[in-house]
Image (cartoon, rainbow, N blue to C red; front, side):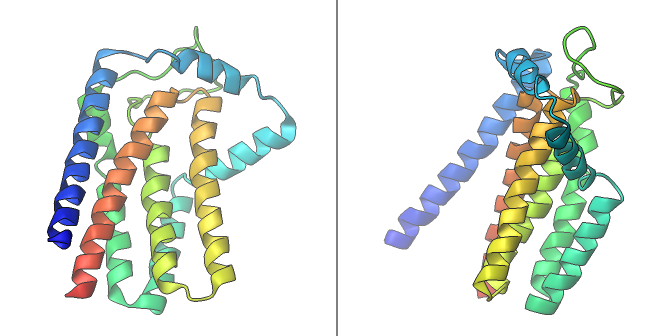
Length: 211
């Protein structure tokens, strides 16, 4: 009975999370920005310390192609050696799921922040919601975080890897807004969409591992 209740609760939370993202995407399709997006962006763009900006830029570079592809490949090989084909397979499937980001952007169709509202050096021509960089780092480093907890036995090494994952996700999200490439709600959408994919991968991995 307890297992059944937990299963129903899991399904209910999953459905609520999916519906929540659909609602967020629908609002993003209807509004170029949300209440508070402009204010938050302006506050972040007031941060102009050279050291902080360098850290933001350097961290964001790690989520760009082809670097992120290299990290994905190395992570897949590392977890294949640590845990066999399953973690490598789910990491690979996460990379495939990432390829749907451009399609989702086109469906929502939200424009990027404009030069009359925020500062940026060069603006991308792709749509804004969800942030592709934010989605990518959540999928990649979210899976690495999870598989680290399963397959890395050394506590210090596991903590170091997981801390790096959290750092990269948070800083890339901040950099996207600081650079004027996305609104905070775009980054939120990227985190949310990436989180849905990671959650699905974790559930499937656990079921296959038990089988």
